[in-house]
Image 1 (cartoon, rainbow, N blue to C red):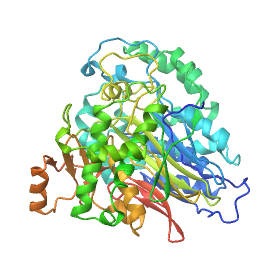
Image 2 (cartoon, helix red, strand yellow):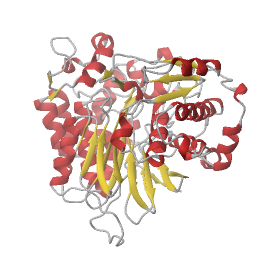
Image 3 (tube, one colour):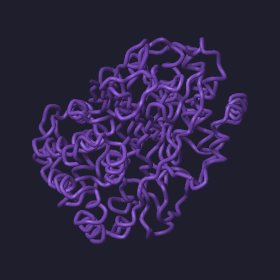
Image 4 (tube, helix red, strand yellow):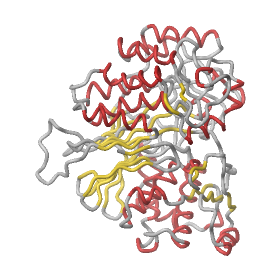
Length: 540
C-alpha cells in the first residue's frame, strides 16, 4: 500500500494527457502568501512550466520571503489531482531523529532539541522529477528564490506584524538569525531584507541538487552543528531519510460534490468529518452568513475538535479502519445527535501562537491544479539557524508534544499536524483548490469555507473575506467584533465561552489568527484565484 506524508500539492495535470472532450481546461493562476512568490509562480508558468514546476519555485521563494512560516528547514505537503485520474497525495512528513532523550518535558525542548528531520527539499525534488513538465531545470526553479535572498524582499504589513510578535525571541536567540534584523531591530513595513547566507545555500542546492541536503556538504554541516549545540539530528538521520510516498487522499461527499483532503497524520480527516456533520443540516439554513448559520457552524466545529481531542488517534501507522469510521456518514450522524451535556470531558483550550504554516494553490492552463502547504512549525520554527547556512530549523518535536502523545518521544515518528490542503471536484473535474495556515484553526477555516462555497453562489474571494469562527472545547473564537449582544449572551447560556483573539495581526479589520487562505476556483464558468486579505498574499 502506498504511504503518506506532509507535502501536499493538489494538481490536475496534463499537457501530455489526452483530456476528455468535456474536461474544463484550466487557466494559469497562482495564489500565495507573498507577492514575490505569486510573481515567481506566474513567471514559471509563462516560461512553459506546469503547475508542479511553479509549485517548486513558489515553495522555495516563500521560504525566503516569508521565513517565519516555511523554508528548507521544514516540511511541505502536496495533494495532486490530474485530469482523468484520481487525486494523489505526495508525502512530506518530517520524522523525529533516530536517537531521542526519553521522558523530557516540553519546556526542555528548546532550540536544536525541538527539530525533526526536514522533508521539504526531498519532497520538492521528487515532485519536480516525477510530475514536472521537463521544460525547466531544477536550477531555473530555484533561481527566483536565490534572487530574493540576494537582492532582498520588501516587508509587507503581515510579515512586519509577525516580526513584531516574535521580536523578543528573535533578539534573544543566539543562533544566527541576525540577517533578518536591521541594525539589530526588526524590519518595518517597506524595509528591504537581504539574506546572503541563505542565498549561498540555495545556490549550492541549485548546483548539486536536493541530495546535497541529505548526503552532501550541507548534510555534513547540519550534523556537525547539531552535535555542537546539543541537538539530536545526525548525518545518518539525514542520509537515511526515506523517499516520499504517494497515497490516495481521504474522501467524502458533500451535497453531491467530492471532497478530498490529506491523509494522517495531517488533519484532513477532521475537515471531512466536519463537513459530514454540517451535511446533517438543510443547506438553506447555512448557505449565508448569519446568526443561525453561525450557531450550526459552532456546533459542528466544537463537536469535531472535541472528538479529535477526546478520542485521539495515537498510532498513525495503521490508520485505515479508525479514520474510515471517523469520516463516515453514520459516525457523523451519531456525533451530531449526541447531547451537549457531555461536552469537553478532558482539558481546556486556549489561544496559541504556536503552529503556523503557509499555503498556496496553483492551476495551469492544461488543467493541472496544485494545493501545497509548507511549514516550520511555530513562527520561525526553533529560532535556530546554522550560521553558515542561513535558514531556520523547524519546531516539530516540540509540536509532537501537543497532540496528546505524552512525554515519551519515540524515534522516527511522523509528526502530526492540522494541515488540511483540500480539493473539491464535481463530476470528476476540479472546481476548488484550497488550503490555509493556522494550527487547529485550519480545520475550522477549511470546513466552513468549503461548506459555504458549495451551499451558496458566492465567489471564493468573497467567502475568504467573510469573518470566521473557531470552536473547540466549548470555547468560541470570533473574528467579527460587531455582533448582537443577545446572541452572544445566548451562546454563553448554552455553555460556550467567548473569545475575540488579537495578537496585533489584524489587517483591514481581519485577523490573521484565523488563517491565510489561498485558493483557486472554477465557478459560474470561470477560473479565478483568490488571496486572503488577512496576510500579504497575492493572486494572479
